[in-house]
Length: 560
Image (cartoon, one colour):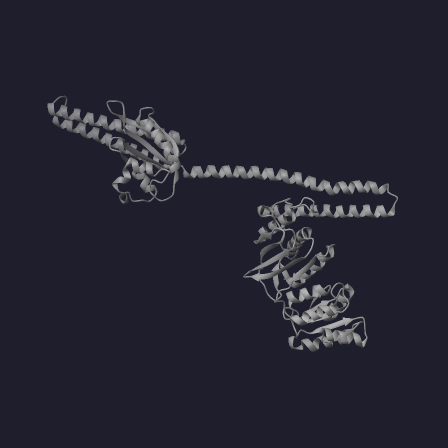
């Protein structure tokens, strides 16, 4: 068996044809020898009757053994090469196929009718695109222009509905008196595995070439992106050394600082990509209170915006705690919000989350420029930028996708040009649950434009209540609609829409929600104006902790 496995397919088929022809020749010679022996025995020439019988038996036994040995060899060779013999009678149009084919595919030969064993049926089982090539070669054989068939084609000989690649070989075996072919002997070899292996190698080669191309492009892009901020850092550092004007010096220092931050951000992104691809990025699960994380992100990114765009966290009806990697979750939201900031000149950037089965769906929606439909499939590629003039390197969304792939999540985008975009992502929660005492805390919305005043209220109330901040009148109305708080602490004096006007809007939406006005003005007329605007209570600053706790508790005691 091992001897035949070492042969090439062409050598194997050649040996099979030789063995087949040898068997046919041997059968002819044996027949002639037997006739001569019988004739001699009949005429009494050379042998006595018993001697003739004995000689005949010896010859027959030797011949039978020789033929049996050759049958075994042929069977082994056919099995080793997954090769199936066929024989075509050109005159009758019939084709004979060896039992090996039916055995190899576990098919009963008796299931097939007589028309299956005709050349027309065989030709019909060839894949349409390959049929013309076979017919051309077959017609050349019949015309005497060639004496063999040798091609690879796709065949569904057993009518399974699946075409398989085979190596079809055949030679003219018998001819008529005019020299025309009357019989053809050949073999069909199943080469589907070889074809699949070849295709896999081709695809692997293409992937390797594409990987090499992407690596070269990546290095070229990294080189360009590093040199851009580096040029400003080096250039302005030299200019600063020779600048006497303090104002110009401060301006140049700001440029150097901004480009240093850009360079640091780029290096961090590249390191993140490297860690992700090398499998060295660690994910540490911990309990994450989503409302707290999202509010931190909102405040952090709102401070970065220099235009009038608002960052809005849409607080769900029920807060959620998940088990995941808080650092990577912050990175996902931050990259998506930062991307939205770059392409949003006015309106709002809204983000939030919701539970979907055992997954959490996060989203970031903006009212920016939107993404052209033809570029939607490319937004998660490396160094992909819709606007080359925008700040950044085109790595943020690519990092988001890589992180989510490692976490077992996914990311996608919906966008309308000129209207805005919404990025969604799904991550496994690894268990979701309310934190004891946190999920059931009443929510207080604090409308306060001064950081110190908000921190004071938060310090007084956060032990028993969840506290959410709004920065101005418009923000408090928006936050009320999205978070549905249990009580509102409303600063009267805020930029834009003032507190009393905001209270009037909210009171129209909800006549019963408790609103407590807080202000630095302490006149009775101020109290009357607050009550007239729809507030339930009025407190003057500075706030007294115990008095504030008592007043809030009076309205929320049934929720504690």
